Image (cartoon, rainbow, N blue to C red; front, side, top):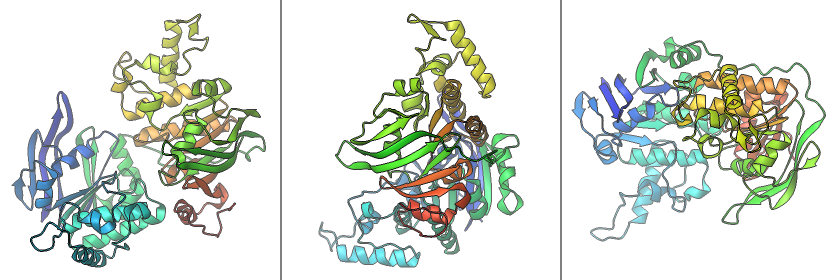
Length: 513
């Protein structure tokens, strides 16, 4: 029996069609994965199922009956719950208070909350689904994986039979990913139907019963997981053969020459909390140093320190033997440092400017494109055309604003611009975030080529697979400190995961300070 079915579901935003006559069904007690490139329309589809958006046309059926949902309250009433990528929890409240938020149990006919009964109910719920949580713990004191289990329990308490999860493993350690998969499979055994939006194909193959691929707002295919492969799914998503893991094999050992050094670096945020604490590391010529860790453990602040967007309270940064601590981004670029920022539109591109202008942004004072304060438009256009050709940037109209490009092509503009300036060091922060599989392959190849030419790369990514596949050596951050250092020859995913959780494994693969 189909638990959920959508028929010719369409959603338009003005002249843009985000979902175009999508039809699919999810069977009872099935785990269905929805995959597709960034911007393919996956989240729009799920938001219609959860009542956050209303369809332009088409039908949604639950257990064979057509339904109309004008809000998440309607969706929950019909048995549909959704766990969003960014959790909607109150950090200062306890586990049980978050689960019962909005549906508190009162003492008789009074307005007072019956805390004893609430704790008892939540403890029974936790035991029923075998989730390792203490109802009295505060959200701010539990792991990211624990917070996700709280979000799931919020929905289960409301008696949903259909659970939608949006990119559920985006901020989890490898161990937490494994735990989540076990939990979801147990929920399936207990009668739940689960829909997962994800771009991680290994997890799709391990978790799902069936897969629907969405491409440019349309269904590109439906397959049973047992009848497909990661390669076939990637090909359906992109429309061509894709190398899922680029070989990072080196031609020789990493040089002993130190190109970049961070020593005892510290900084505080606006609230006075220390976010980076006595951090020290070195990067050698011809090396990719990966910085891994669950998001929110000081990586963003470290990147801002290294790229001139935040001031240090202590410590030094040296590049080619010169002290560059607290220099501005423009100065760092002049020294020979390329910067791929964490947020491409907040820090790397101006969406209202042309492609040409963005191709020289940050380097617009260079003499090859600007003399005596006057831009050389012919040189700028020639530079743009060269970058488009070399980096395979795909455009509709060469004169359009950069905000009209897909996420992958916009990101390739940043990579092309930074590498074309011939830096000696590239600071690459989340270089493939929100980028389709085809563009990921291209960006990884350019980063490796840059390294093989004798340059250095600092790679910061929340995608552990990206760190593992590209890095020669890596450090792991936890609460603003280095929890461990790992070389490529000694990598063990389990050890990395423990370090990401702040646990010292003490086994092979970790060198502790």
